[in-house]
Length: 577
Image (tube, rainbow, N blue to C red; front, side, top):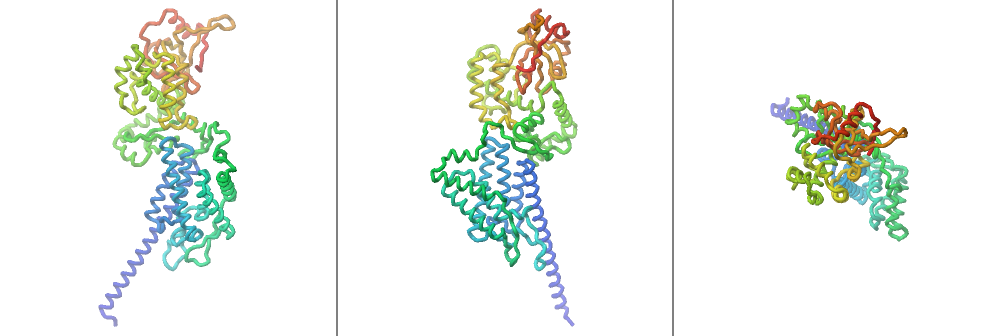
């Protein structure tokens, strides 16, 4: 019979084996979860990319790379899975650079994109040199999640295993080197990858698995990829041999009609496809681009509905979870009180109202005005103009704008009216010279997207200088499509029946109708006001500041305005300036 000591040793051994077995099972279960989570991150990012949501795709790809480094086995600088994730991130960054980013954002995204392709290429080249380009290492592309002995339960951390390895390598070279300046290095790289691709194809695209004997997988290469690489190689050789100029080489990759607005496909958060270019610009005009609601953050959307919204009020937008958490102390008051929901209702109503600009158009106009006013108030031409209007501006507005970054200050309504009055008081030549300098030297530094992709149309300022009408008006009618204004210069014409016809303007408001602006005056039509009207987006828009006329109008103008209100005279209502 076993002694008491032997029994104790046997129990201890069994306990140790059980703990060891449970630990191994826990590790395998955790490994399976990590593989699934990494694969889902890549797959979700690829779906976001396919719908045109490039910023979301980039964010998910970065998360995947970080997660893989922390949780996947053999996710090192020799890993084909890591190279695949880098290639996917490079693709998403390419879409960001092409479709959305401008200025400094473009430079940062483009630099990161180049680094991704270089890093991935370095991994592929290392595998090629070591003879392991067509070999999947153990627990790399197929990870054992069943433990020793079973060997049947393997999982791949990537959603499209047929693209891993050689297909990724050939695609990476095609994307990263095609548009580089031709050199001996690019020719050698292209020659090497084409030679390897032919070898891979000749061997039926077979991938071996480390330690699995004859077990192998079949990959695939896009049919037209070799043709593209061969053409690229020939072009690079032609430049080096002098058979083609560098300009002719670059022309191979430049659209034939470079002046036409580029048309691409980009998606929205709901997954609906939108035709970008002019279509994207129109969509931005309607929906607008929101700024992150966190008061300490200045990030602005580059495409409609890029930012996530508060799930409760559906109004406050945030560029990240961190910003939402930081802003919650402030936002929860407006969120719970219903103030945010009220703002959302106003936003929807504005887009249905034809007597004012759409929400996105309002944003664009106010942005243009904010930058223009800041520059104009500090300009040499404004400083040299001496009259009552510029004196008022120098005393009240100038102290607020000095030593402040251009366009970051939102002036109050009264200060805005002072700047407008000073602008219209300048001579035509001084105003035009100031605007030309603003458009040529300042606007390119702001970093906005081009107007064809929804950026503010700053060029309209030069039209304002020539066609805007400032002065005294009479509001004679309100209609669902705007208010009819009569200018105090009493412009008139004669129609075919020898009747006098008075010129009038159908004017809309910026964010609300002119009628709603004048309602607090509680005065019957005609109402005599002082303002300016501007051409914008095929409409005539009020400059945003409306004041009751300080001096009484002439008797003749009063009579004409009253007759127009009562439809006693004929009006030629202009809808464009």
